[in-house]
Image (spheres, rainbow, N blue to C red):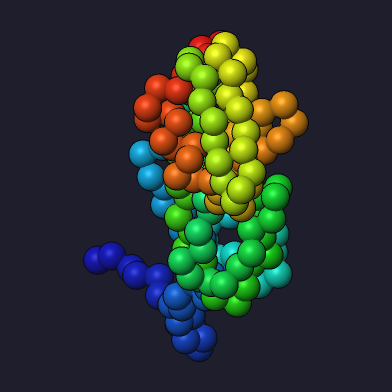
Length: 163
């Protein structure tokens, strides 16, 4: 006959508990002009922690906008924000890199608000974007108008210089 060695315990088994979450999540979406858009912290992020975004535009593209869809944060120039006591959702978009130099292929005169600017053939100009408005800088003068700049490119008056 076999002997059994039984031990009795007075303690009750420990209750199984779910892991308690103390923070919130960060979700980053991107459009097709962005290769990489990630946050260094994505789960269980505590309020007041600093979160850093890493954004890499696709070849020939530049970062256009970082839009906060949820969480009400402000992303600074270093692509960082302070985590609120809420989930954060961010959408990152890119656009074509138009900041390169362009050359004037044919002379023309641009008139905006009674100001005239001459574009001389074979002169190199720079395109800029300030506050969402495109501008072309000629001889130190910047003409700011999305419509004018896009028309100059579409009509072939400005041609991108490949570097």
